[in-house]
Length: 200
Image (cartoon, rainbow, N blue to C red):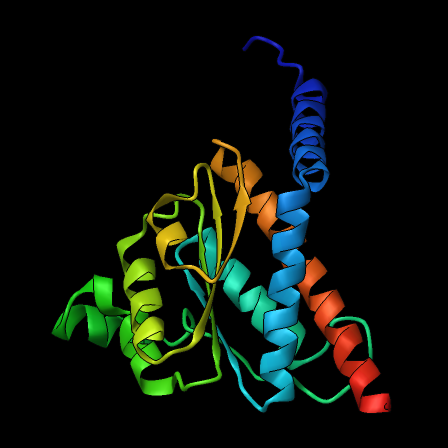
């Protein structure tokens, strides 16, 4: 078995991730979009609304991660913030897939849970996942605000977004690494703003 430069390959992954994140943070439009997302979510919470988050695969994991940070806590002690990941209930997901089609797994839940004043946050590295698009369109029907977290050229989701945060990369792993950092930035800023308003 030929020796492989494992340490070098590991270092390459970290350096490429850092390079991609530096490109993202140096793009003022990207940072502006994240700030807009923070404002939309904070205003939703101050009005008594909730956040619905969804995506497939790694983006499903990111949805659950975000819901945990907001519902429980990120860094500060404060009241729980209502954030629901639409990726967690296997009975709902499989029933929808069986009785309707997989493309409806998020839309059906948005139809059940979404209300005027709520926010949908859709995550898709390609921006073209059909079930994510259908979920966003269901949110639009309910006059919810729509934030999309996507990659590459943004895909079809760009047409449906009030706020679009785009990691302009072609590699799925790099896009996901930017996405989770964006999610942490949003959670931190929203939490701090909520705590500030609660103290006034």
